[in-house]
Image 1 (tube, rainbow, N blue to C red):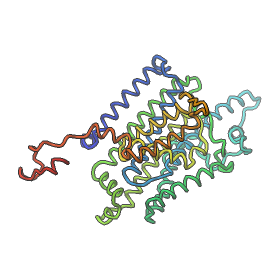
Image 2: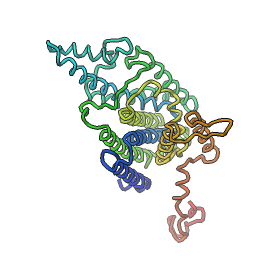
Image 3: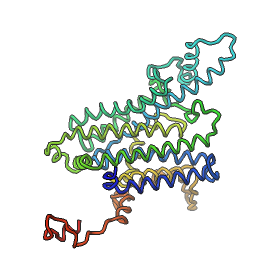
Image 4: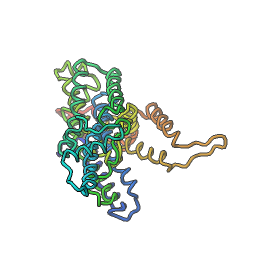
Length: 408
């Protein structure tokens, strides 16, 4: 652990700032503090922490390994669907059981299951559970699906793509095609996930009907913060040491790393699959706070936004991904939620709900042209280490010290 912190000094800074932020929000929240922060804003902050986690995953696969994946939000959405199935089933079961309890003849388990299916799928004209819902009644199995579904999809897709040595823009197009195909499939009512209606009412956690949303929101906020901290530590370990050197080497010169004898495809597959699993876990925490998930959340544009967040924050820096995701997410909520005042130019009124995406696009272009290291690059300038003193022994003997070595 000491070696990890020594190679990544940002870990202690990040964990310290995250802890201070969480304590501050807890002190100001409605459920646990002064009430200065509304429950809806606590949910927004909790969702932002989840987006920061998936942004870190994206930064590792793109900023460190050089794989521009335009499909990681698909894994994020699959994690949300996996936990959302249990949330809808368990909540509907409580409602159906309560309504059937007053019947003269107690219902059979099959009647209860049929009533649950009709309640959930009546909106798409169905009354039976699809095979996808085979484990929806089990929280443990659905939590396993949160990990297995994104992980297996990434493993199969990555194995097929990497063994064929597809790289660069072609790999990005393939990941985008995978995401598009998945979203188009989920839009169909026959997909078994309620088509365009998606899964709703996810904020109503089964068994916590009497608990105020203010308490539920602060609990999810803390769970999201802990997940982000653990994710940061995990990926800091991945990009450190020998593994980190190989991963960065693949990004900079894949052919040379392969020539040195490393199994490049194995490293890429490991990074791609691991980041997909973490993205799925982030989605499983995000959507119970959002309350609804539909196929639009998996559309390719969502993954493009994710890449923009990482680029703005500064790819190749874990904290840069956090800065980019948090900044863009909170600004998006402010501009599109009516927080930013409209600007009346006399001949035209700028309404930020319509112009926010234009502003985001211009920000991406500006960062690409004038600050390619992103916002995180500014932190690097401030925290840049001084050149070591010339009296420091950098070589095997005192005469080995050279000006160029001292400047490194």
